[in-house]
Length: 190
Image (cartoon, rainbow, N blue to C red; front, side, top):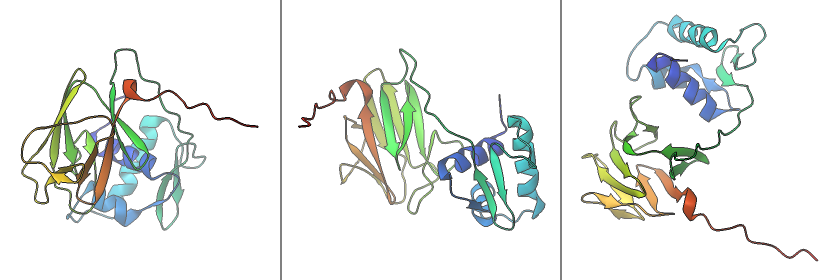
């Protein structure tokens, strides 16, 4: 199913915010930043999204209306196992994994970013991560507040390793290599 960018951004945000109700003003700012839109615009977008995912406002299974407040994602969510040959690299932020396959990945506040980090101090297009096989490099995109790897501001393309911490604005994302994860430690239980 292909969703228009605003519908996709709304769905993604509601999933990440679950089970919390996202307020109308919060969603308006996400979808139409620094713009005035008719009060009914968000409601129309939610109706279009419900139609696309087969949900019903009267008996919601996916998107719940909190009357006078906003909307919440109410369906069960289960992680999708990685496909063989898929991404071996993840970024983890707020407990949410973001798989990084080969290619370029933008990190920032704009909806066209692969990894949307909408917190204080993050530029619209803040940094770019280039992945090729098991190698990954991060570069700052002339962001106002800089990009940090392990608390050091980077000046050029910088390699990323397992458990490195990427700092952008007030957010810290952790790099995880799936194949480098240690085996589960056996605990002794008397």
